[in-house]
Image (tube, rainbow, N blue to C red; front, top):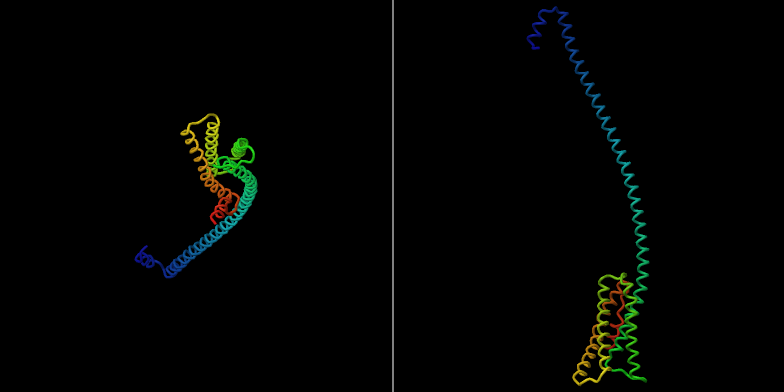
Length: 248
């Protein structure tokens, strides 16, 4: 409604009527403004209350979730600790068992090396009977090789591929040398040889002796270092100590 329309309406009303209409219009407007103002305030408070309730609900859920996470975390930590202790026990048992195997295997290995040095030495002193003493050296080397194999192969699983490759290398090397040595000795004892054949066999025996004195210590030193790593010690090898004493 325009101002002109309102003026036309007021012109046809009496003064009391016009006055009443103005009052009604004024207070009606105020009432409407008050109503909308109160409604907005109520809605605002409702929204604020809903927001606060929602906030409290989220905080409560967050606390519950945090408690559950802490509980699960503690459970996992306890489980990990149990697994760690179980692993330590298993590792300790494995280390103890493997340590005993290493000690015994090394004993077989050094006896095998010692018997091969004795067998393939270029010069032997004779105590009573040269042939009998030579047969004793052969039997000792054969026995040492057999006992080493009997102990090594069933316990091979306790060592890494790096260690077993070195053990396999020395086992294969000694097998070849023992075989060649026994074959040549049998040929020498079995028949009369011409000078050239004798010289050839003599050179072969000399090479076997040289190879045994050179190749086995190198591999044995590597194995000693591997064994020390497994046992957790760092002392010098027996062969290194002997070399230092010889060098002095």
